[in-house]
Image 1: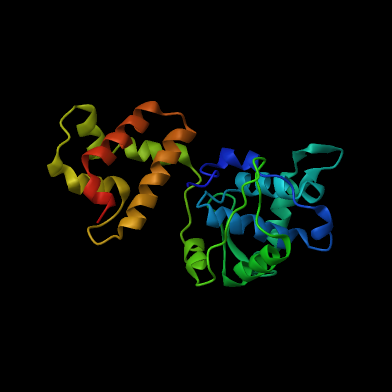
Image 2: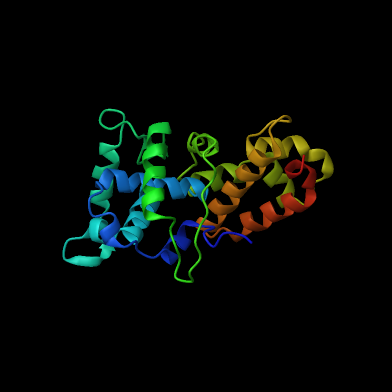
Amino acid sequence: MSSPIQHERDLAKIVAKDSRLHADASLAALVTYSLFWLHEWELRRSIEAITVLSWRLFPTKFSMVGWFQYPDSIRTTRSLLQCQPKYRNWLTGSASKGYSLNERGMQVARDLVEKLGAPQTHEGEVFSVTPNDNSAARKANRARSIEPEREVKEARKSRLFEKWRDDVMSERDLIHVHALLNIFEHTPSKLRGKRMKDLERAAMDVNDQEMTRFLKDVRRSFPSVFSR
């Protein structure tokens, strides 16, 4: 069964943690918990996503003063700053490129997962945790784009999109698929699939239906790209 968290918009499904369980936790530590789950769900770790998820999970800590129903992005930004190498050294990144936990940050987050448990949704779904075999840490190092407009714009410039639009795309265009996804012949199929998923999510973000149709046709026309 697929996870109910497939897109950043799905973060609205997350319910708050019992505030008594994290009353003594710092905002910086709680941010690592939020980032950990964005890693697990393979979502883009943008400042917006971190702000919303931290607020959904810990509203008593990350809501605006006097406006409990809204997240406070300033608190999130300050917390992320405290996690940077200059201070606690739990993560790297920036608001323009997104954030990634390092091994120390992953451990802080996992300690909190043991204490708080996994997030839950309104429907009662509880999430499992990737075994601690450094696979999550490897995910952390694969920063994802937080600029869907740029992703889609670059895809539209591709030779494959041009051929698709002219209705001349064929099986011989495999090299153009590689160029579209910025992959190589030896790239593992799992990474190929993730790159395609990134593009599909970007098209969804900007509501580009033409790009969505194009990517659907690419999947259908070149199944071997994602299965090898």
